Length: 231
Image 1 (tube, one colour):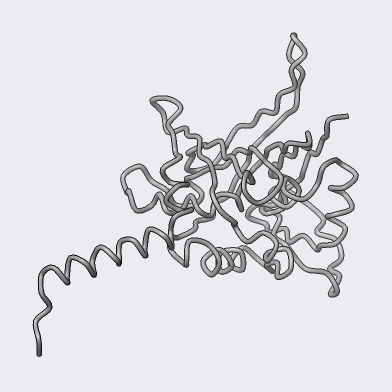
Image 2 (cartoon, rainbow, N blue to C red):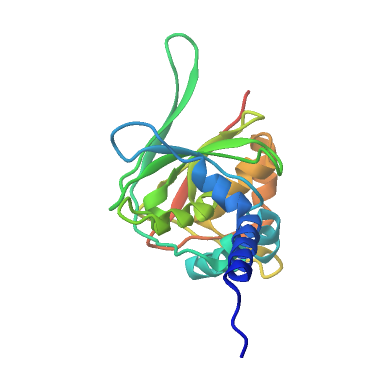
């Protein structure tokens, strides 16, 4: 068996690195965009590339395991892990004394790593939202765990888009899931915010959009939603 010359090995290694860089270019740019806001684990990041929302709208997910499977099959080429925990969060809209509108939230979760996520600059409506990176499995002790930020659009807890639509979700102790229409796609309640931010420009559009789906409320995290627009 012929030995590979060192120069050929270096060339092959170089080509492999280039191929990996091209394959994961959007993921790498997303990870490189992460910025720490303070001496505490609070961050901003920009999402590059497509997170397959249009496909999710067609396939949906019957439960959170279905969401995890979808993310593993369609995001970051199957790299990463995704966690899920119980929440009891709160949010509110308010007007400041100088007339600015604000959307505020707290994260009452077992593990908290808040991040302001900017998305949609390349693929559609521009959005800004609050996500909990700890939900995706990122820990500051593991560099590789940063790959899990690729799933962050699907656990955006609240946010606003460029048309002035704002949405916030909170947990409630009891709920009525309602009837399930077999002719409609089922989506998980945790993914509703992303659907509305990316696809609705006002409250009326948001309501009409949600009429097209069954919403799966899992008891570990049943959600209710506050929606507002620029009117």
